[in-house]
Image (cartoon, rainbow, N blue to C red):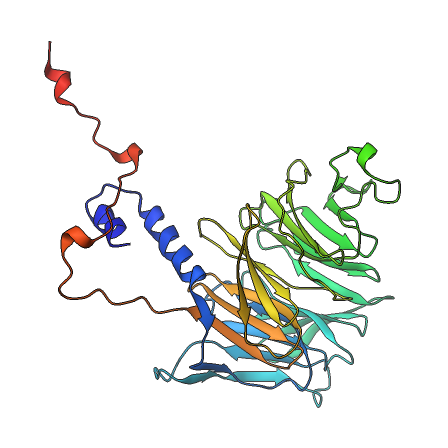
Length: 376
């Protein structure tokens, strides 16, 4: 890292490389923060978390008890030991509280004045953050397992919500009209919401090689319920997880299964499973609830990097805070845990320059001049 900083100061290397290296180091050193607590409000399991993308300061949680809580993640006390306080909650005594389990909460991507929630009570609610009153309530005939607002849409304000057996939905962060959905029938479909004729494509785990698939498995993404979807931040790939204990990475443009092998990814959830992908690292990492732990994989090679242990019961959801490379996880044990990068080891005062790691300059930034240019 010191070599990268020296090269950056000398103008010999790309500043983005230094940022990626430090973000990657921080993710690889994630550990349970024993000095930071998140105030315990929920009386039953936590199903969903979301951190607003504007400041990365405020976090929403939704629980099996129907309760929604908003937390302030900033350390206002400036003390080493502190608790992330709940600013407010939509508790059981609130007149508009969800009657049953809250499955998804999400901030409006461009303004913390609005957030949304959906529940097993067959409703999706649009909340005014300032008044803590619903600005609108949508009623459905079936259970709402998941919903999502596009993070990039500028020409529409559509909220994708699906009923009954569609367990996961996610808008593309690259194309504002493209939506991915995962279902209990093992299928993952990509939709262009401007088209009424049907979906763009149905992802096939066998990439069209039907000779290797039984007729039942043809055109399915998983041999089980698909209950988790997550796009990479550039929108070029889609990561899916199913109850067949498999996770698959897809090229979102071609619909091709990239065949990355993550091994067995234990998934016994009967409803939506919220997992997360890092941002700005090299390589990128996936944080996946795995029983009472969180498995950390490299997205493009499938390597299991580590298992984060701290919860006492099944982990249902996790959310990544890209500003400081922090991870927050919610579990059936009613706790929200904060995972932060381990502090960097201080450099000894008597360290010599020769003992520092040698940095090799990116060839694109090397001086192309040579004394041979003046010869002959």
